[in-house]
Amino acid sequence: MNQPVFEVVGVTKAFGERVLLDGANLQVYQGETLAIIGESGSGKSVFLKMLAGLVPVDAGDVLYKGRRLADMDRVAMDRLHREVGYVFQNDALFDSMTVSENIGYSLKEHTKKSDEEIRERALVCLDMVNLRRTAIDDFPSGLSGGMRKRVALARAIAIEPEVILYDEPTQGLDPQNITNIAAMIAELQHSLKVTSVVVTHDMRTAFGIANRIAMLYETRFPFIATPEELMHASAVPVREFIDDAMEEIRELFAHEAQPPA
Ligand SMILES: Nc1ncnc2c1ncn2[C@@H]1O[C@H](COP(=O)(O)OP(=O)(O)O)[C@@H](O)[C@H]1O
Ligand SMILES: [Mg+2]
Image (cartoon, rainbow, N blue to C red; front, side, top):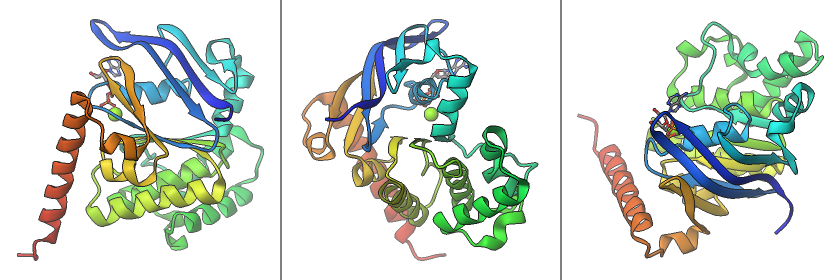
């Protein structure tokens, strides 16, 4: 395969007694969509933040395009944040800002674009995530869950990133919106030719859009496979995780199929 965009080498991370990572290794290759699955609380969000340099490692290294994050000065780290879009868990939209201001936040931080140019870019990004342009001056609190996720996506792509990191992009959505957001991630991947890392609980999304799936399990990534391989994996932790996740999906969709009372 081609050059890794991110390389995680022997990374260790603990919060007090709680050891999340202990000698974890993982590569993210240019142009791929890598899904990261694993139990709730296993450290997936912390791991994703480490890739973006938002959380420091205790030991080991994270490299971006061959450079250690630990060696990066402010300028290099700013550049990383211009090149790497981030969709935070639970949207993390700024409720005091309009949709336009939310989408334009990184552009204002990292570029010299005028307010007019930023607004224009925000409109284009709304188109890209299939949101009506009239939402541009709305506040996030007035939007549905599915719309908020789209705004979060639009905010991540506004800087024209090379890499997009998604933390649970379909969490808390109804089945229709899960399908829509997953399709949108696949479409962005295709049209923008980005590298994507998608942390997700949702196996439909993982299997639907990923080239490779890595399972965070007991502080490392012992299972990394294609969706096809993973579906037929016999390793017990993987089987249990997949079977549980499939059961959840069946319940979600069975519930959704009920006629309204
Ligand atoms: N800043 C922090 N300080 C202390 N503990 C933290 C911090 N961030 C995360 N944790 C703990 O690390 C564990 C893993 O968190 P997280 O990465 O959010 O898991 P996941 O995303 O896999 O559900 C949790 O038990 C959480 O409480
Ligand atoms: Mg998380």
